[in-house]
Every structure is written in structure tokens, then in C-alpha cells.
Length: 85
Image (cartoon, rainbow, N blue to C red; front, side, top):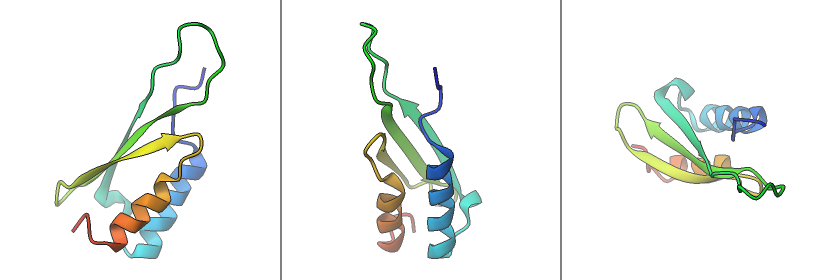
């Protein structure tokens, strides 16, 4: 079973957002938490949350992550809106 919620494409999208918004990706900590898998053996989509924290301001935001989400776009909106300043 895959033990990672975030795909390499999502990480690349995060890095692209940082570049386009003029911030350094190393200024942020990213953590992920996967929702628990069902115990009944059914097939399921990976879902969970990603938390992004700006290292210097300590401001953080939790985004839904996994199948059907677009957290990098939500992160972009927060960056452009000054949330992490």
C-alpha cells in the first residue's frame, strides 16, 4: 500500500506556485496526514489533509488533500491574499 498521500505532481505544483508567487519553497514546512483506510477491505480513494506552515511567521493552513482536491490552487489563493505574511 502507498504510504504517501501527496503525489510528486502535487509537490511540483506546490513548487510552481511558490516560484510564480515569488516565495521560496524552503520557507515552508509541509506535512501530510492520511485518513485511515477502511477496515472492511473495500477499495477506497486516498484522502487526508496537508498542512503548510510558513517557517518565519509560523502561520499555517490545513488543506484537504487526495483524490479530487486541488490544494496547490488553494495555497496559491492564500499566498496571493497575504495569508502567510
